Length: 350
Image (cartoon, rainbow, N blue to C red):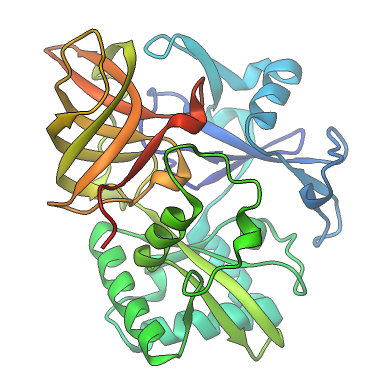
């Protein structure tokens, strides 16, 4: 069994990441993250990963999907509900699976400067909470062993809805005390020079990121530098609900803008983010009746944006979801046309 952020590695040297929790019985839908220099080379300077000996290159946006569709179509699957092909593998197709919890233990066993810096963060969290080391893992370059101590960030996973809530509370206290720093307390505006979202400003983005409390800075003694860290939420096994077999068809109805009230935020921090909502007001003029029951976001920027009872603004694609027994509407934010017109944010910043 695999879940979000587990990493299947193919025999050719393609490193994937399981995406979310909705999968067919014998496949896992994935993002493509990296590929070995033996089969792929990127000319984007920041794509190179060479900290572990063999060189790998990171994919950005839809580069990984296009690479696999072109070169390795055996690692794709046609999803009839979406009416398109996606990257997907079975466990039999991969040479190795790297899991965040196991990756953290391997990292700590190394005892190098990145391991010690990871402990600097984790020990502060563990000493101020009931959380355990088994509630955490690592992803990205820390999981795959090609990090560079002088450049890499600390990328953690936290498992569980309740565990995430406790972590956010503890991190907020550590930020308040000065033991750690919230990454978004002070933001260099030049960081957003290429910001492209039309209905969601860089200032709004920074505000929402700050209150999530999962992005921080550590003045690391081990690394002798300030290092970024983040905690990516992943569901525990008994919290996972797989919707793949339940959904029969998805029909796109049009692009809508609306004000909505959040009635269920339990799955908002996870990917894809799912928000139970009630409609407050439709602010655009769609040619159809709008009555969405939820928002589903596949866009990282719109994860954990809103909390229960808050009223938010959403701009995205209205869909009719047909299940085996019924149908309902949802508003989806995803990578497709009008991508930068999409938004999900608090209706009025506090």
